[in-house]
Length: 405
Image (tube, rainbow, N blue to C red):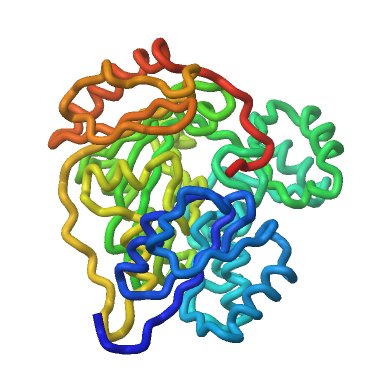
């Protein structure tokens, strides 16, 4: 590290995550401050890598957060502000604008939080998206449902995962839902339901260039798993395969269109039958400027050796004198299987294959990550584990209306 004065990074997080980001930022020689919520006071933060922890009742009140951080800035020179959780991205962007701290501003942040904004921008740039309509003008909504056959999916514009998503099968089913939503209707988008295989691409971006991207395919689509129950799996797609090449190209086009300068992204695409019925094509579903959830970071690391949280921290703390350099990735394959469990502490010791590199340690959850030199071996293990997990552990609980810490 250089002998320049120590720089300070402020991390916002309404949920317990990003521990490796905090550790890496500290290892890079930065002073690390964490602003989180009071209910996470005793969470498992890496306190030996955090200089100060600040608590607020929540991080959603713009005036309160602005006042608190501005007061802090009277005595601390903040060089970076980073949101570790998706729900804090807009607040962090607003703080950067207010304090004139470098990084993603409010306009760009909307492309990575607002499902309407990201769809409009992607469509403007020629990227294929399922037909959609803002839930705003009733005449336009009626025209949309007349032109675009159902079923449709009603999605909150600024939620995450499958939370708050509803499937609408016919037009008459929509209006009671809108009456229930009341003044919140305009915060939703209606989209044609496109059945197909769902993929996610997790990227590292520095100075507008996608330096690394891992293409994975979910087992069952996340929306299906979240709403109907089931065992969650995802696995790395064979490198240089037709699908991998197509998604690498599409992902680069998308990130360029949305204007991200640096950071990490988690984008989702669906492979569906083409409109002429003569093949298949990819549709863009959504993207977030964050590390993917469901232990995707650990899964990517098992195959490549790259920890997305750590690389993100290295990008944020890079300087002109010490620019970011991507380490050379390994070329293994990996996959993860996770299920809600009926046991408080499920025992996975009966799973003994040498390819297992990680075991989940979480109340009422069972999970494993496997890694191997060949994609076929990972697929074989995940396929065999899926039924076993269902028999040994699987439990179902309703999807919450709001995210939980």
